[in-house]
Image 1: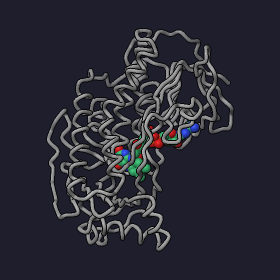
Image 2: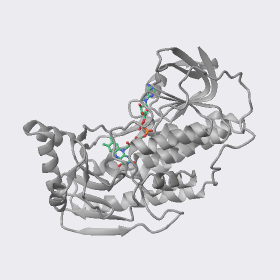
Image 3: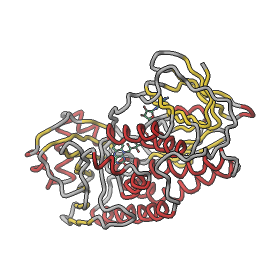
Image 4: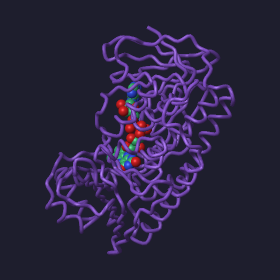
Length: 413
Ligand SMILES: Cc1cc2nc3c(=O)[nH]c(=O)nc-3n(C[C@H](O)[C@H](O)[C@H](O)COP(=O)(O)OP(=O)(O)OC[C@H]3O[C@@H](n4cnc5c(N)ncnc54)[C@H](O)[C@@H]3O)c2cc1C
């Protein structure tokens, strides 16, 4: 069967659900396709920085995160290998007086449900296998298989790849890599109970970093990270548990007794590490958002925040492009330019942090650089117009296509 949309978004987590939500609130006809279940977890810790919290607040979703029991984070504590310990309070600014680290099975679900409420046709269990050609060498939509096994073609004026690091959309359009990273973190993390954290606690030790992230269900996420080569050596010569203990001791000696005294609430989860990339973010009939277009190492805990940022940068341009007010090439080039301008310092600093060859002095300088890049990002988002928290009426995009709503079951997860 065939359906027609203004925009088909592939990938239904932070980047994709947010983009779909903002487009639908502006009256754009959107389908959101996600291969996993609604509310499933993913391999990721989940500390949001101020810009990410600001986005949730501006979109009217922060209260839902708080109501779900996500604890406020009111300070960040940095520890370094020379014993220096710096505590920074979260100053009320831009309507944000605390940070939050909602679990992904909570945040991603809230975003998808908000998108569905705004009118997005949401399909879970739908894996996009290929893109289809549109008129004049444009991408014209996607082919997917629904959870029930039916082959479905979705025509769309624009296809958005929000399908993560190994983006199918990026591969199919051959999106060029503009910047390729060289460094990467391998990470082990788990959830524990009875480990009160002072807020976000980040530690930069000897060739390793670690952190504590307070989250839902009175749990704290504890992670330890190092180079992929060192992680492989440690795991081969022992186990994931012994590697985790060794890295915690190297990165954050002060965490060791606290973690030992805590009650484990999950198995260890691992991430082997992958260098970052910045890809060309658009072409005729397609755009990339989130990790699909721009992935940096998780050690600076900024991927979700940037996905929330870029969802709005892209949605704003697409609304104008689809509404016929701005040519596609101009609007989407503007999206990429702003994304890259706001990301450049974060990318460079993250690349260095993920090299794990710093001393305490250099680690402090890198933390300052990340912090300054984060301020630029917040300033930019604050300068954007306020967003309506519900669907606009009438639609901003003229009704140019003949539309067929898929009525075969999957909407709303
Ligand atoms: C170990 C680790 C720790 C991290 N910690 C943090 C942190 O503390 N803070 C932070 O901000 N960021 C963190 N990140 C980064 C963060 O996880 C990502 O930046 C973020 O998930 C990007 O969101 P996204 O929506 O772009 O992609 P994803 O979350 O990867 O979502 C992409 C979705 O697309 C779907 N998909 C893929 N292909 C298809 C297809 N063909 N058809 C249909 N669906 C498809 C996938 O199922 C997936 O659900 C961490 C990452 C890792 C690996």
